[in-house]
Length: 161
Image 1 (cartoon, rainbow, N blue to C red):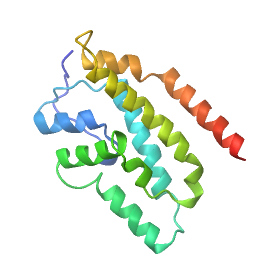
Image 2 (image 1 turned 90 degrees about the horizontal axis):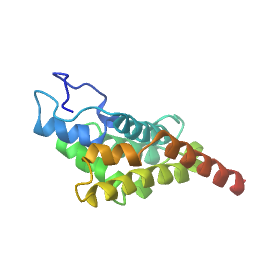
Image 3 (image 1 turned 90 degrees about the vertical axis):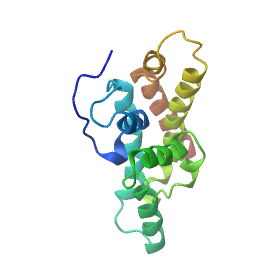
Image 4 (image 1 turned 45 degrees about the horizontal axis):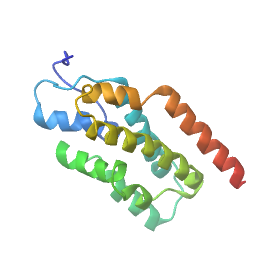
């Protein structure tokens, strides 16, 4: 199904990678339909951003590290922002993100959440034309899988206490 909106709106740090990439390729009219899995990815970006930006009283050095990290999701071309986000979601940058002390216990949840997208991306790469990329993503990134991930993260945090 083709996207019908003539424009795309969103907050860059929270937009999904695929939508950012589509904005590079199709700047005047979206070529990728905005779907639920894009919103789930946005939730990942919001949660990750919150672990860095919502605690106000942090050390100046940590504050600088946080600002450097989130600036990569806010400035530059859409393609540059997408590449920076890919480093977090599919590369090794998640472990290097500066999480504030109040939210350190959420690192595991972010790792588990990230794992959903990594597995979905691998399924897209291994697709062998069984369906469109969007169909594969719809199958892999679901509400129930996110709920299971949250439950697993909560249980792990409870076991650490």
